[in-house]
Length: 52
Image (cartoon, rainbow, N blue to C red; front, side, top):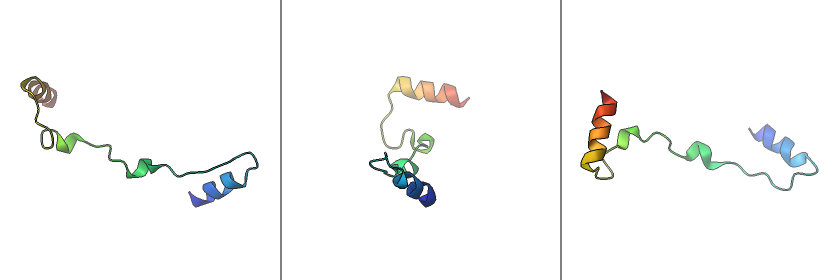
């Protein structure tokens, strides 16, 4: 990745190159369903029906 950044910075018309924080963002929330937020009865029913 650092090689790609270096090449991009060397291009004349590129003003700025910044790394994306995407690799640090958590995208799997399946483990936390119902632990952080209190689900409504309707949401619980949807969750149960999707698991089956």
